[in-house]
Image (cartoon, rainbow, N blue to C red; front, side, top):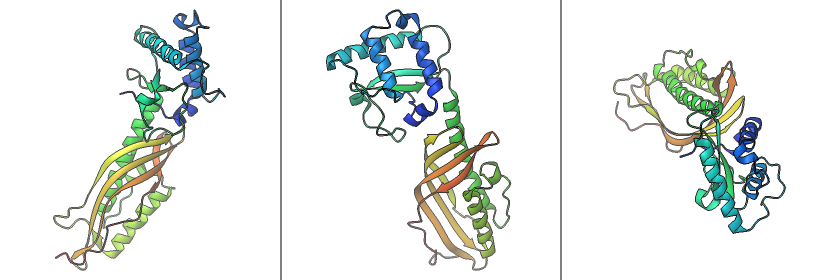
Length: 277
C-alpha cells in the first residue's frame, strides 16, 4: 500500500515535489505531446493539488476524465518502471470513490479534480527525508515512553539523565515528570516492591503533522502504575488507563525532543484501599 503525503506535507515540501513533477512533464514521453488533453488534465490536477488553480475541474465530460485518467496512469506506470534517475516521489491519480474517506493522516479538504485525487507517495526504493523523519519521530516517542516509565520504576532513586536525551529539558513535559518523581519519593511511593505488576504499552502511533522544526504525534497507550507505600506497606494508588495522547516535539541539536505531552484526566484511577498488603 502506498504511503501518501498529507496535504500539510505537500505544502511544506512544494519545491521538491514541483521539481519531481517537472522532471516528468519535461521527459520526451510527455513533452513531445505537451498540448494533448490528457497531459493538460494531469497538469491541471497538479495545479489544483498545489493550490494554484481556481477552477477545481478540468473542462471535459465525465467519460473524457475517465479516459484521461487511464491514459495518464498507464504512461506514469511505464515511466516509473523505466531505467533512469532515481525517483523520490510517485504521482498517482486515484478515484475519490475508490480512495474512500480520508484517514487520520489526511485533511478533509484534500483537493480533487473531476472526481480524482492526484496523490503523492514515497518511492519505497528511495526513501526520502520525510519518511526518514517520520520513522525517527516514531522511535523518539517510543523511547520517551520507555524513559518516563524507567524514571518511575527507579524511585526512590532520582536519575533524569536518560530522560533528558529524548525530552526537551526546558519543555513542560520534562518538568512534569521530574516534579512527579520527586513528589512520589517524598510520599514514600515506589514500584520496586516484590511482584509489582506495573507496566506500559504503546498500542498505536500516528504522525499528525510534521514540519522542519516541529511535529505532532498522536498515540494510543496503556499504562498501569501501582504505587506501593513503603510507610503503610500496601498499595496506595493505582493509575490504570488506556487513552489517546498528543506529543509535541521540536527539532533541536539534530534530534527530535518531546516538548509537551497532553492526555486526558484519569477515568478509572482510584486509591487502592481494599488491596491486602
